[in-house]
Length: 401
Image (cartoon, rainbow, N blue to C red; front, side, top):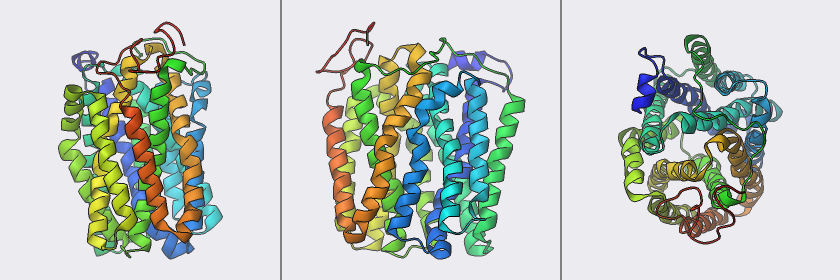
């Protein structure tokens, strides 16, 4: 942290850039997320089938995130991150203008290409610029910054929807334009910051990272249950309005604002294995609760608790930072996003069909994902490092694959 702050005596530091990125992304994405379910139901008459298709299409660019390494042959990572952020803003701005299935599929893909490339490159830049000893705390702080931004976004949405009754179209446009404007500012207002290690410009897929890949895979599957079906449950089954969904998000991000940095410190103290154990045990209870809940207020409580566990997922990233070759970070970020989205591409579409017959089964499948993650997390050693990636199943030395 001290190293980052001393790289420049001005405010134009890598940490400041990461903070601005952590502000710009939720302005666009969380506005899109909060408005989407009500918009597609009210304006496009979506059912579980269409929302499942849309969400699967949204994850296709994440599945293709491994191509990040090829783009980096042409663009510097920092420039690529900013351009991807601008593209995401454009997709969000256009969303309200296409209130029909194929139009929404197109704008969702556009937004998602920018979002997933941005997230992959931002993760890589964060791991390159942050010291491993302080990475959990600083990553927690960045989550807190994003949460404060989200609080402002959701409060503004609630005011614009409930009080001023602004149409969805203008809310999408506003969020997208703000994101694009911040991207332009980041491009012209900051110098290029070098990484600590020269990054590989080819795909990196190493056997000794297998546990990280497995945890990432199930993390992608679990996230879809929350992102797609838990949110859809609030609208379809319990009749939550867009303003009420926004209030739920306000509660979620208020928690992250207050506790994300502390959770980062906690991970530094207790280690990745225990942190992930706490997360997955909690998720087993939450997903099982979703399956049987019949009360709208209890469902909202489960939704808030579910979101609370997201900050603990920092532990997967910091586990990888500890075991990885520093030159692998850029390439591995794209590969890990692809692995994360193997499940994410399939889960929404398949479970969207299951949803028609039984929402309960969808959430019990989520319980199964959480159980699998819990078992895998027990293989993380107390002190992860190159050559000490797992407790059992070591497949290669630190110098090899």
